[in-house]
Image (tube, rainbow, N blue to C red; front, side):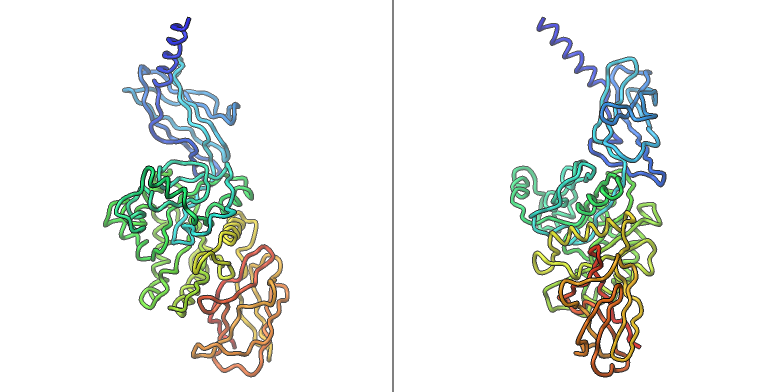
Length: 473
């Protein structure tokens, strides 16, 4: 009796092993939906002793077949190999995909597949995530990530980025390592990490909750990196994993070659006398190249304006980068900038975990059409001793925690003038009460300096972007 049971077990094992899926999908994978909310999956594999036999597939949600995807012939085994294509799979999941050789018990299945939107995470440390790993965003089964170490899809959890253990050399070499961290050493590093919270996971969880659409994340950021280090031209001059842009493109292809959009947070490393004058052109060229290489000329590109830095170097260039970022959305279609200047920090430059969550939530609200992108200044009006500054794209009304702060008026030479004695908020308008007569050529700014105190947000938590100089007429 035992011998018979063993034979049955061996036979079942051989049958199960006689068909294999070798490419096209992996467990937990997210497939990018098209404009109609559908996705196609092309699978390839091998089959033993199945020559000329049909290859059948079905898609299930739980134990119930998805309508239109009950088992049917999609291909034939030829020379021990097969390829099939399932088309128009609807947004959602999790799905279980079963493939079998017709007329036999040979089958293989891949579970926890999702159809939704994939977002690339790029930039430097505040996108990589250097927030304290305390009270981090909880995971959501509808949010998966293509991790950097094993390059496998998995349910996303903090931290998303892993530099010393990353597959691509560029990440562990920029982390000042001569080789990749692996095995027990990597396990020890991961166990003892204290930093690593970012805005990507909060964005994705909020996006999935607001839209009902599953989300895939493609972490590609690296702390301390400049626009020069993200130069697409370096992709042509090195192995794909030896440049930041090349690594991103290699991972883009490995994750399916289709994405919904990109989230970007970078610019701190370009605030300097040599780099800032070139920043605008480099940033706009980067966006254009990403869209070209992702084969989507209207790819949503949403980014965070650099925030605070407790430091006194390159102040004027810091503000210039912020102003270039603010104006980018006015000249480059389908971009949006989000303010971080009113955020708390977990160290001298890195946004705190709670405010990274807020930024992620805000970006998701905009991306899903649940909110305006946040307050943007219109032209200020000088009326005697009162300056009226209206804002557009405000969610509800403006408000502040305590006395409204962050505005300064500057002389034509740039120095701040001590003329504002009271700041009031009236709906979506800020009222600045001033003393004395303004000099000709005076300008208005919000968030001047590298470490200003700014505390005005709208009712959904979107802060005022840093701006200026705006002329006062």
